[in-house]
Image 1: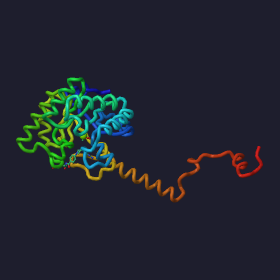
Image 2 (image 1 turned 180 degrees about the horizontal axis):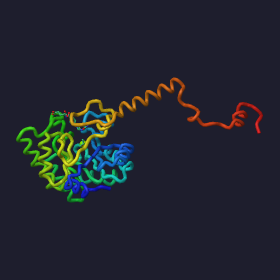
Image 3 (image 1 turned 45 degrees about the vertical axis):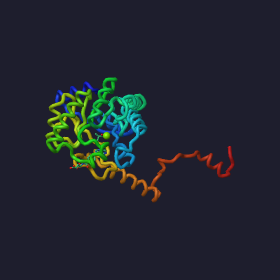
Image 4 (image 1 turned 30 degrees about the vertical axis):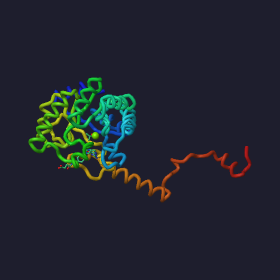
Amino acid sequence: MKTITHFQKMKKNHEKIAMLTAYDYPSAKGAEEAGIDLILVGDSVGMVVHGYESTVDVTLDEMILHTKAVKRGAQNTFIVTDMPFLTYHGTVSDTIQTARKLIQSGGAHALKLEGSGDVFHMIKRLTGAGVAVMSHLGLTPQSVGAMGGYKVQGKNLESAEKLIQDAIAAEESGAFALVLECVPEPIGTLITEKLTIPVIGIGAGRYTDGQVLVYHDVLKYGTDRLTSFAKSYADLSKTSRDGILDYIREVKESVFPTSEHVFHLDDQVLHALKGGDSK
Ligand SMILES: Nc1nc(=O)c2c([nH]1)NC[C@@H]1CN(c3ccc(C(=O)N[C@@H](CCC(=O)O)C(=O)O)cc3)CN21
Ligand SMILES: CC(C)C(=O)C(=O)O
Ligand SMILES: [Mg+2]
């Protein structure tokens, strides 16, 4: 299994890191079989799997449940789990207790925390306690309420400078990697050059140390409107719709099941059942 030191080495060797989200047993199994470098059990699960409006409705129990399923599907892949909204902003001991559940019950190898300021203090405490932590800066979807929508971050001098300072502070607080979301490409490049930890971009341009995308975007499964930075490599929505259409049609037309799909009964038993002479 690739682990933290491996990801640092990949950055040093300019070997791109490919991260993908997964939320359940089959998606994790497929990602591992394809050779993904690490899996993110993202709180985007709330939107793409549960149909929530945003990620702020996702609960700790849901993140534990999905992490457990992913763990069973990908036993040899590094798993990062998102700490859900407002589960790392109270006391240090509450945060550590929540982290313990995601790691011990869920089976996560590392946790991802969105944001700066007080969050860096929590990252320091978690990493100090031996937890591997990934920082998430730029567009931080859990703050959608405070940000007033999903918008590209770091577009003016002031916000770009703050973002760069935050990225440095994330590294200094002990994070082993940074997810950088929705920033102009030159900002992604600058931060990637400034940090010694790997920077994994999502809408952060071509020159970050790696990329991460949401499973349902990559495979176009149930998501009809893509963000401008995502790319689809398959069309599972169409594949599944076509399959279900065929199934319905075959049932209606009595094409399915055929004799291959049925259990046969010994002729003698049937004869006897129908009232013929037994033995
Ligand atoms: N399917 C899916 N993909 C994701 O990448 C994703 C989720 N869901 N859910 C959780 C968060 C939310 N994310 C989002 C959601 C919307 C935008 C968005 O609308 N971005 C605009 C930027 C507009 C601008 O400021 O110019 C875009 O055009 O991409 C970005 C990230 C990323 N995450
Ligand atoms: C989009 C990625 C980075 C994420 O945080 C998620 O999937 O929840
Ligand atoms: Mg997330």
